[in-house]
Image 1 (cartoon, rainbow, N blue to C red):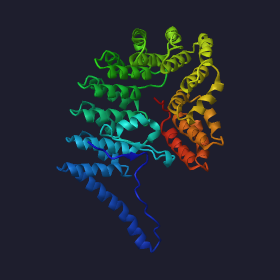
Image 2 (cartoon, rainbow, N blue to C red):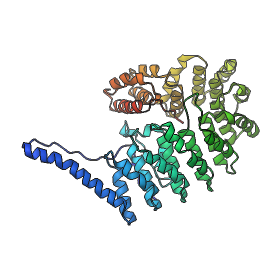
Image 3 (cartoon, helix red, strand yellow):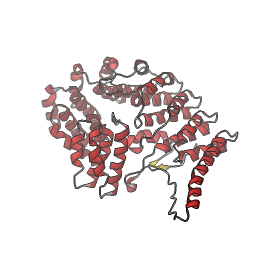
Image 4 (tube, rainbow, N blue to C red):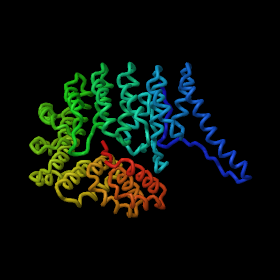
Length: 440
């Protein structure tokens, strides 16, 4: 099913314009007419959602997606479980439209595509900077989770991606997260591999806990079992999720896999996950791969040694970096040395935020090092380059350090429009996501 492209901005809902004061009675009547009109529109949309005509329900769902009405998410939630697959997909798109963030710089704005029939998958790949926190009822999350059991694989995949988007950008309480566990465990047993892979990847976002917290045991068990899935894509997705969850019970199996496969996508996925579990006893596994011909393997090996705090590997890393020229590997070296007690490397990581080849990698490192990295980011709000100021504001919004609010409030008055908008969005994220967000 084709979906329209949507840029990373909320839909323009028009402007009321200037309304002059005419007379007291007229002004009062006008003020009363506005909420009455809004109520009438809400009633009409509610009725249209119950229509027998699929096209009428779709139109109502689209209207809700572009509505500023605070009741719109609650009205939309039941449509996620509509009997029509087309309505369900439109409803998931509408939820995504509700949380879209306007682009700080319209010249570099990306467009949400429709490769899978829904914008949720593209937003999941884009990460939490593409969306903003918004108050959503629990029914949105519960109905999306219930849709992981849907009979249409497109709906299952869209629902999984949407939960991944919301899990990485919205404040979700432990009780609600716990209510989603059974649907995820069931979903990882669906007959089609794309659904199992999508649900496994989302589990790595939705159930990630601040250190030293642990993920729900049933989720860890399901992902460990999914490491033996017959489809390679699903096995890789499960390993990736186990790494993000820092599931210590999977460490031995991940290490065994990294050693057994030695090279290829599965070996890299196992090594990457093991690097996030970060247990010192696996240092030899990473040291043995510092000179690997594959640069992605070298990156992960350095990251793993840094996360483990393996000071014995400093000389080995140094020797390897002396003959290294790849920007991604060098950035991994800065990350590892920062983790190994050399804080001056944080400036090198922050510099990577403005480099096209390393921006995503640098964002992941900065959010992993937050909130400790936040004070240094605040200093970069004074840099002469507006791109640096914009990047610092974006990261401060994801860091979860409440003390950064004052710096972001000042930055929201930046003379550069893109930097000011990034600071404004950073304030919204910081105020509503107290634990911060870790970029994948």
